[in-house]
Image (cartoon, rainbow, N blue to C red; front, top):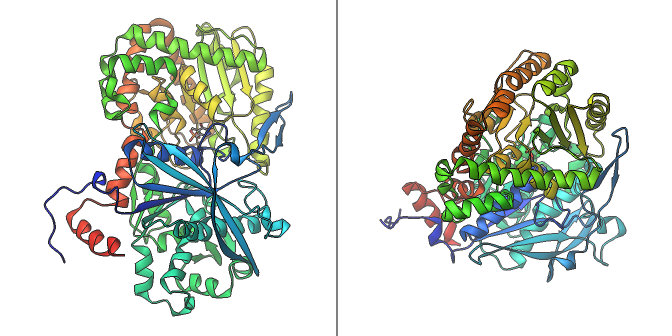
Length: 587
Ligand SMILES: *Cc1c(COP(=O)(O)O)cnc(C)c1O
């Protein structure tokens, strides 16, 4: 082992030593580009924004999603219909001359890349390459492989994953990047490990790979798992794997133990070929270790990109009181010192912006003085959007005692998720049935980046009711916290770490069933939220301040990306440093 330099080792010393290549099926890059569906994409985008701010040498790969994730329309009954959102890559990106190929079924598919430059606050650029198969040389079917995010069947998905993983890693090579670390953000990109193994073998047959060859791949790869919902882990049949990937590759994957219950499991594949893996919140790390007990799965809790999600009025307040907050989000801890009146006024302006948007979209004029709850996220059944309607009479009574209550909903259901769509209808029906002089319930169409920012900043309380333990992290409550908006939430995902009862928000207590948890939700509204909001604005303001100081300073991607850099990409442990220097940087 070479002597270890006593010089401190940190990511700041890396600029010319190669890149981290970050792979994600979806990335929320720019509000004008419909290349994401929800939390995973927003997290990826926020990660890249912070990497750019921090000057991390990182480059990202995703698919172009030329037809865009869908635009949502709701009819009067809350029935969802979907419309494609085609967009023009040339409006945002530059086409790269490089092309690479991958084999899909028995075809050769050619792909190119569009580059988007994500600029950080000090000018550092994180290039994002959006892979595109829409080329004349490809067949009609193959030209559509990069059209739809989470569209089509599992055959389409596996083909897309070949383009993302294998195509992406070949593109990184073709573009001349020297990659030290491949980061798979969720299992969709796990096939990149196969491309690396094939390169390692110099074109030799996969059957000839030795344990040393595999170790060579493993020490370059890190993996983040994002969901404790079994259905959220991509799986493909042996038949699909043989037909689409090929017999040799399938045999190798079987030999490496990447099949479970007869299915090719992309999470297992990623875990088997990674030197480091993590879950996205403390509790999710635990659940992941239980799901995959063979692996040492670490935890790096998610965050959000603060300057992206803090509303204009709160930004102004922070700029005045904590000028360093953008450079280093840890300074947000000093928000504990912001005057109560300032945060109340700033929030009132954010609320006004939200209610103006609601009026523009729906014609409904809501009251800025009235307690307003927000609930917006993917309409997945485990998130239980309708839990608030378990006892409608009790909800109306709460509204009456609060001098009015407004509840704003938003969220898309995946086009093939029928139970999710019914859930939206159930909320919409209740909105019609229960809305009266004191209680106003609105379901807003087409939840996306812009509406997400307005909602998380403008409501008074952010509500989250997932069924435990299915919320890996959740990030919208973090956006709220940065805006001084407390959460009222089930103790799952990030909220286990973020909730200090009565200080940063409130916990909905665990119950044996939905009814018991709904009871706790009502009780917290009756005994804690409503009395504080209606009777003690000064104490409410202090609670808002606490959420920024305690949760805003921690649940951000500024902290998160530093953790990835030090724990996953370039571990700072001295033995690890020697290993990294000797092995990873050798090539
Ligand atoms: C932040 C965000 C999400 C993630 O929300 P969760 O709380 O993790 O469910 C999803 N969609 C949009 C548009 C967002 O901005």
